Length: 184
Image (cartoon, rainbow, N blue to C red; front, side, top):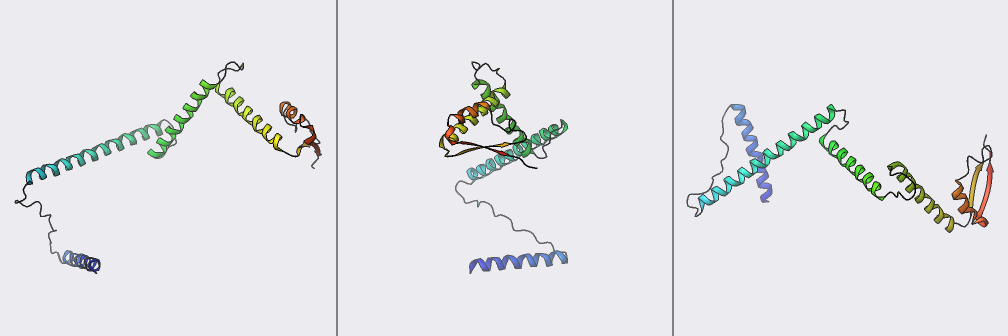
């Protein structure tokens, strides 16, 4: 009930303010009564309020400065040919490039020089993925009941798997069947 009355009162005040504005009548807004003079620690409270306002203003100025700095960085990025359209996109691109750099840095430190490969990221990463693929293939071959190798009759050598993988599969020869398929 009280909420309903408050809503109704506010609606009436807004309606009256519109009428007064149309008639040119100037109505002063309600002012905050402030702190009464009889308040025991009025000066201390006023100082606290003033400090809070100053801190709020400083925070606003810092936010404005950081926003301006971000916009400057974005404009510079766009001048250099960057594709980011917002500051958030710029930050995401920077984070992605940092992660990519960290991954390549980590792969540099983990790459084995004893394998005879250079400390080049592409070869090391390719070698690691190849090993992982062969490891997974061996797991699948070990757990499979039947293995089928599908060959294209027009190019059987081109459609075969690698020699290493075929050697591991041939060790399980009782599971392997070859099928020749020719499609027109």
